[in-house]
Length: 257
Length: 223
Image 1: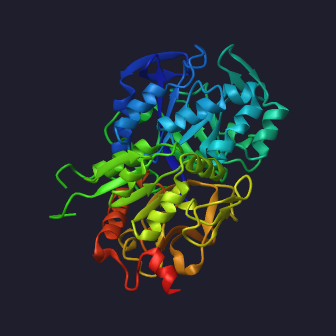
Image 2 (image 1 turned 180 degrees about the vertical axis):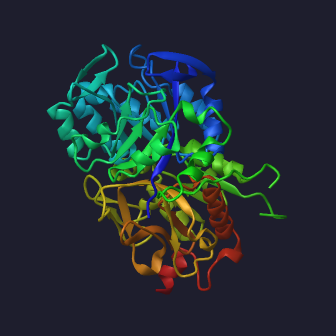
């Protein structure tokens, strides 16, 4: 049986891994490669790297970072998000070391181009990244560039319904990096029925993780800052989540083995 | 291989996907890894590894562009061990219907078709090894990482591993010196590295051969 996944999320700004709070405040944590190596060693099911300044600065994907990560020889699948503007850049990100890529602004501005990534990469490699919040009862998709939220448009919905992207990363941007927990209404009111969802933002303890992972439409949960506070956090979370269809905690072989 | 010569793996560099991860996994296992599209280099390797991420037609187009189709077919038929990983496994098939009907390498009978029970198979799933396949047996019931939407439907005689959504589907195939793995052993942490080691060393070593195994060309001749 396919397992649900615990995804380690690393947020990168100006080339540094940062602790992020609501995407508003950021504290540097160190080199992204080092944080990622830890998640690899601790047995995360996937690692998601999101470079949050690439789109705003129109820099394209951070291929040099991907190449540095790739040289580490990770044995955990890597998802890359940040700055992808075209099919060629999506392909380049995969060739530089990502197994899968996520698109947000490209999907918003050019949904057909986002869908066209499936031709060279396959839909299984593509994730829709949707920072969402509910305001006055309405589900809105945040545009990081101007801070405005709008409903998911008809063209984007059609692309998602058609299966051009395999999963959606539902980001609770308001609670990201905070202790209040993920707003599960974002999952329950997600407008595309049957789309597999990855929940991320504010998931800081086992109870919150259990609440999202028990939902049938949720295939994975992403945890960011809260995995970096202590050694072997992935294994600790997995032990607390026994009974859910997760891959059991794994431990890297010692160097003398 | 303990006490023996160091294994050289020829990693086929045809521009489809992330080969650095596979290369790191191979060198991490202690093998020499030659990343190349040069036929002499690849042909001299103890085992040829065909990686792949992405869609079938684009990958076959890249193999044709680099004039590697005939070369890989001939080397496999001559008995050079060949391991296809993920899309690299699917390329071993006769055809794929991904996006449009495309001919594959045709090294193992069968066709690549959409998964029946789901649009995608993404994440960690356990494998069930069939027929006591010696290369995979130690990995029976281990969880490995998958990321695909199409599946290689091969005749039972070539199927050596399955996984399940509700019903089983093929995730590992073998025809003598040719092995295909639908999952990503290089991204499956310790379980994947162990499996990759067993497969490569089993193919390279005469002890890994099953009774009756013979290189593909001889098998075809015998048939």
